[in-house]
Length: 132
Image 1 (cartoon, rainbow, N blue to C red):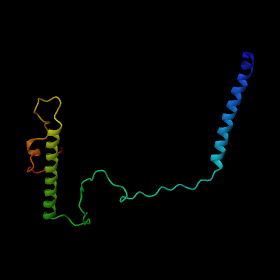
Image 2: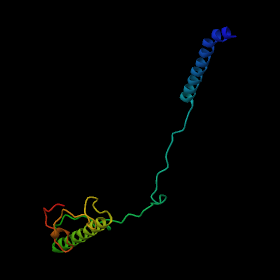
Image 3: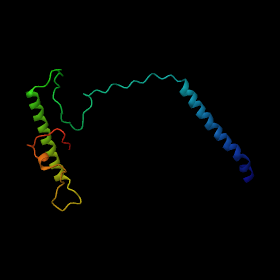
Image 4: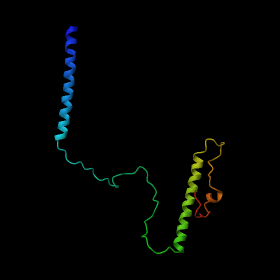
């Protein structure tokens, strides 16, 4: 019996390998000659996607851009919006400082900002050239 197995084992291995190769060739030829229609993904529409979190709108309706130079009212409005943005940033920094204290700091200390007290105060004007 052992003689029979040892005589036919290489033949059985070759037969299994030949069947595997034949199966792969048939799959490749079938894929090459099969006609498939062009796949077109449906366009993604914003109305069908429900965001998990609503992001705040950063910009209201954009005003048309004009070539005229800005006047004092435009500059004042721009300065007020920059001041409001600075207030929001300082408020968020305070909230984050309270929520995530520095692990190396003493208990009760919050993260201190590298900004000066002039920059951190909500009433402080923004000076061009000052970078955070």
